[in-house]
Amino acid sequence: MKKTILIIGTIFCTTCAFAQWKPVGDKIKTAWSEKIDPQNVLPEYPRPILERGDWKNLNGLWDYAILPVGKAEPATFDGQILVPFAIESSLSGVQKEVGKDRELWYKRTFTLPSAWKNKNVILHFGAVDWKADVFLNDVKIGSHTGGYTPFCFDITPFLKQGEQKLTVRVWDGTDSGFQPRGKQVAKPEGIWYTAVTGIWQTVWIEPVNEKHIIAINTVPNIDKGFLKADIATANTNAADIVEIKVIDGQKTLATVKAAVSQSLEIAIPDAKLWSPESPFLYDLEISLISKGKTIDKVKSYAAMRKTSFARDKNGILRFQLNNKNYFHYGPLDQGWWPDGLYTAPCDEALIYDIEKTKEFGFNMIRKHVKVEPARWYTHCDRIGILVWQDMPNGDRSPQWQNHKYFDGKENERSAKSEANYRKEWQEIIDAFRPYPSIVVWVPFNEAWGQFKTQEITEWTKNYDPSRLVNPASGGNFYHTGDILDLHNYPGPDMYLYDTKRVNVLGEYGGIGMPLEGHLWQTDRNWGYVQFKSPEEVTNEYVKYAQQLKEFVRRGFSGAVYTQTTDVEGEINGLMTYDRKVLKLIPEKVKKVNEEVIRIVNE
Image 1: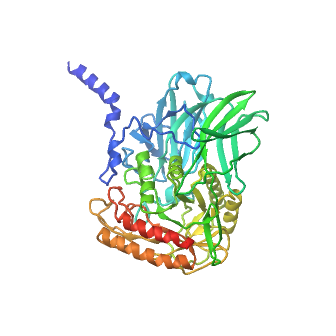
Image 2: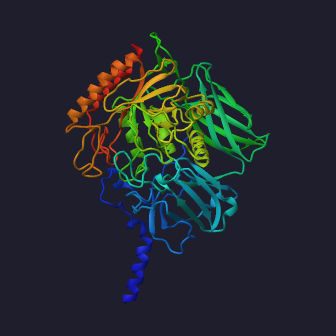
Image 3: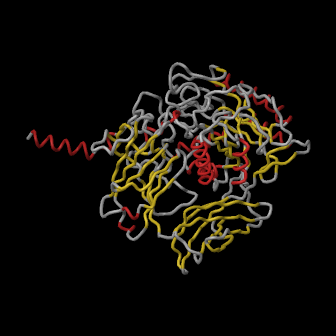
């Protein structure tokens, strides 16, 4: 009898493995962490700019192991990890460090739906930090480097009957190597945060025909009234055709066709223009036609909007949106979570930060040295907010620079480091330029790894001429790009001015308030200035905004307040790190923000 009970107990523990997962650690957590279902993690379609109806989510509990670099796949694993949360995070259920001398192994099995027979199967990774080697059924099928961009493999040749075994090996040197890593460090303190290693965005598979659509990019031209579209396809030939329908609600406005090698220009007369105040999106239906038969169809969307700059009546260069003066005003958004680190606990959480930003009266977000999952950019498109997109810094760059004065010397990178920067920056632009909310690319932040600024800026401008380029936010300044970007803490200041570029205050503020019960750590909390109540913090914010008004009249055309939320040891957010408390009074902040924004049109 005892033996029987033991066997039953063992079976119970194995089959109820999902019930054993829970967030770990004693750090603060968001309210969303309590709602996570390990069998249904981040279930939303991960790439809404190019959406198919049939797909399978591979998020959930995987086996994991941490081994020294160079070891073979282990025969036994250390336990289970909840994908797609980085292993250092609470929501992974593990919360362990990996480091540069070890590798992280993942393993899981899956089966294909019977309806996918005779289809090609594509395996997608939203993002893996940093180097990923992927194995299917014990065959290495590919590798990818870069911690911020999606990648995929056609796994069809490596499939077998029945159950499929998927294994991933990851190495990440964090701040010990040359790769872009943003705010991650091995020993977090001050403005530097916990390392993130491994899978941190959704893993998924989808069936396609051999010929299929792989990417879309749209560029609006509101002055001439058309939308240019480029559709990338796989395994097609010159006789294959792409068809695009532009839809407004229930009405199809236009249907155009072109050979797969050709760009399409779609006339949209009297277009509804996209802006934060009216974020209208046109739906797109894109079909791939071969020998008269539709062999692939995806849903997408596009916006008619224009970002540019022009001189106002006083001769000051101003940002323009849709040919009207438009002040860019928003918070520095790190995109970190106390329970998920790089990964928000759910889609609702992603939306929450954007909506709160708008409720405070901002019209822009500067996404700071991090890249978000594709769904975040779609939420910005739909909710209506401008995005400045930073390139994550790296290459063991200096961790601190005085915000006003730089030595003017650029970093020296190895040929390997430089080539990797260019590769990852191009991949980021390729992945996210379809999203209309992005209006500014930022190749460098301050002097963190800044190199060949003029060359990198000109390349960025030429590669995507539809957007503005901010060469170095608060960095070493060169006469290149569209923007001169100053940083000053805590209050606003204008200590340089460029008559030939748009002038902005790319960072200021940092008003701190530690709030007991909502702190990542109880000591060593950091802010440029600190206060004790929401009223005091709000009054200081309003004081800075009143000062900013005068600088706007003198020439600033954009400003970035530090920051959206507290992050680890930083306690200078509009919200606490766990998103449970608004630390400033939204109505007062919104009122003064709207006053600042209106000045460029006075």
